[in-house]
Image (cartoon, rainbow, N blue to C red):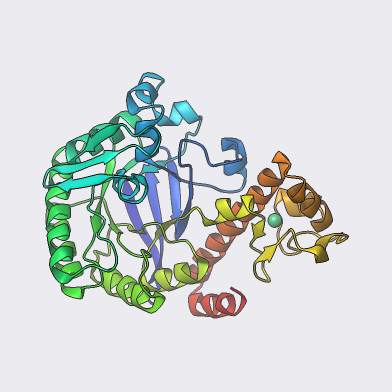
Length: 362
Ligand SMILES: [Zn+2]
């Protein structure tokens, strides 16, 4: 993967990542395809609205159908018919957030499947082996996700485990796959700094910040986002994991982050919460019953070009499958368009205006 820094505006960056499966213009939003599908969307629809890279969850694919089956069916791209870049997480985060029972040891983590209660083990070797068989373009190191709040001592021990695992993952990196390191350290600046120093020493194709948006106050999260970004190498992509609320994205782009993922646009779409250029709306509200206008008059997506709010409300309340599809098309289009315009504002040197304008709307 080749990294090009195109333009900076303050600390905000517009970059271009060149991969064997296509270009990625940053800041970029990665739609989440948890089990190998971005819910309710076909790959062609995703491409049409401008998706350049998607994220798949290793934990889910490992448990079902299993990485070996996916490999035998030609790898994750062929399996799901998506020929653009895919980033896989290491599975660590889901082990920590979904499995009922987990036991962290020095060499990895034992956990119980949330599907059938079976016991499993993932260490650095397993995380790399699974991601290698899936065949993603960007793999993530296995990290120990430090919960919030954590004592300094706990955060430090967890960080050292993450660093050790990162080095083990790096040693197993294949030629065809980029590998990102993950910065931990909870809300302790010296630990974050230490984490970055060690990861830079090991050497990665990109750097991600983990352990944020895990329950800490927003102000603390933003402080740590700025602090972390200020120490990361400038010649590698920077990925802020799991954060996709647009107000937070604006802050993180201002700090210098390039890549984002979040289930928010897709999950909200299925729940009838839609993003518009005038703020969020809930499509089920009575006021939209006989509204003939589009969801968002400023949006050019398929949904907004063809359907009224009255219709979208009706099919949402009727629990029609098409409702999830049309809402998802709109919300993802809105996100991709937001990111495209944000990138444009950086290139034109007016990111601050862009940020101020959107902060008044969001
Ligand atoms: Zn739309």
